[in-house]
Image 1 (tube, rainbow, N blue to C red):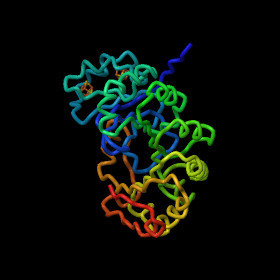
Image 2: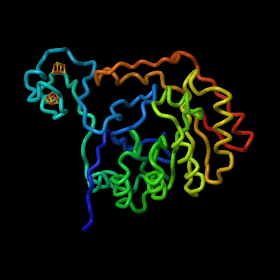
Image 3: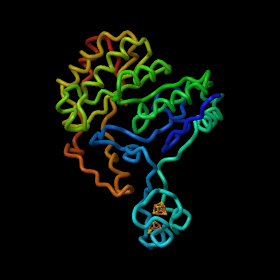
Image 4: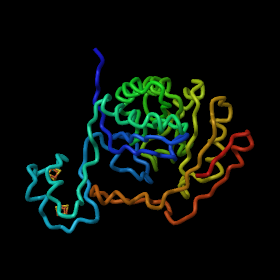
Length: 284
Ligand code: SF4
Ligand code: SF4
């Protein structure tokens, strides 16, 4: 009997144009083992639903009065319709693979006509690999991509990339010590998975978020180019300058955005180390 696994999704963006070729449905999956200091989607960190309260809140206290779980919010959503200013939302909805596939297939013609498809991202989509693979099986004929930090065991990573038409792989920092400082873990496993990707034949794009003072150094650009220079299946490199509104959602989750790098500085852009090896770079 065909299985119908459940996954936890915190957003589905339709008609996306930044996460892979053409027009795409972008599926944001909850759960991430990393904590990039510049993360702009903190609602993607935990693998359980969470309540978010926007700045529209007028502190009327109604949600507290109707809450059946006064000791600890369990994101049940009971308070949501009582809020007079619609300030409450729940990040994270459980969907079966059939339900998610059905939503994606509703736009199948449009995605195909525009050379697009679906991109699974997060959070870190590798956390929900069995679910993503099941959805992927239900999307025959649709171009499927993942956008990933590459942080997972090699078996999981290999299973995921083999099922994809395209992999967008982040290289945030090549130095393992700096990587751990700003991202929460070192990059040893990420580098190992990059090697697997380079051998796999699956087309891939490298994405580099440009964070001022963290990874926009000549040494990091040089090492990144060294890591990928021999890949036959590399399409190009994308550089994504730091998004100054990255901290916007933290307060909604009761968190504080605390970057220790200079948010106001312009990130340095140097494409020369890549061009030296004939690698095309797109600055987004
Ligand atoms: S989402 Fe549920 S548990 Fe959380 S505050 Fe609202 S009613 Fe209470
Ligand atoms: S979230 Fe809505 S219901 Fe709760 S205190 Fe704020 S305004 Fe009132």
